[in-house]
Length: 463
Image (cartoon, rainbow, N blue to C red; front, side):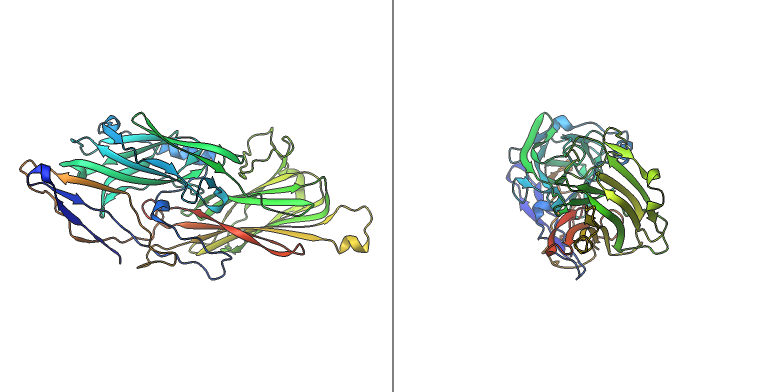
């Protein structure tokens, strides 16, 4: 197991007090199935922290319900945001959310003395980002000193984040904190490619960064475009939701089209039938969100035609569905809710379309000009129990406090073990996810390289 070493330094201006500098470090190992098309890129301390969210109405309601009444004092006005604080994109200012690229809020904070148990401070994020990605759980990383939780993080409503101090803050002076939180582009708010300014406000000071947001557009040929995205992923209930776009393009229609959705990995053969809803897109031309977001209650954009499909839509207990169109001449959005096999290490959901270019004469050429488009959305679940440097290098949790002890008599109260062992446990809150998208176009030039979307599903551990 990795160890965290503590250093004690003399402090000139505090008599017998000593400055305690504890920077927790945590290493985990990502274990990826050998069949994965691409491997994720190395993560760094810059990318290592919070938790993900994808905006759905249900999730937002749950965020609001997490708020609770605090018994301590709001000490936000006693927090100074240092000039080194910033919002940046680790991979440059062109952020591609479908590749898992995120933005990092890096706070360097200084606190006035006199903090007490239960005291809290808040800051507010702009609505174009969130802290959870596709995960249904709402958490941000706690701030620790070694293995001790100094302040517990909490996601409130309207982009507010709250940190509440624990008992360990007692008698601490000269407190500073380095806080890094991953921010994910919200696909509901940011539906199109373009520039976005991301902000966080704490005690009247705004920290900001401007990024170019670029989404992937799925897989296509000259006739049809297929795109898809994992919308939510609930590890506690073993359920997930998925959105697929089926779109004729270039004025070309197709005949005898079949769309299938299935779990090629993680299928629960004894599961329940998925809930599949078919929507006809009735909005303006080319108006589908590039973020692959479906507001299924907006009847001005999406018209529920599930019942009209009749026996053309078939669902199976193993989580698969098939949908047949005699002619594909309209754009459709397919919303899928299903479950996956408990305990599986990898989930892959495939949306596949087969069809023929529209041709009123069924000639030999017609029957030999069929095409297939395939779009995979996969998730790899990692265990955080691995020791040492992982496949992608060590993962560092750099949220930390620095402080001096002040017990009233000049002595140090609460000397910490100089060799604290940091261990992670595999549970619902600290098992990270990787989301892997890759595509294949049969008969259209073979395999098309895909891309990785990284989703962090952890409160104090990183991928």
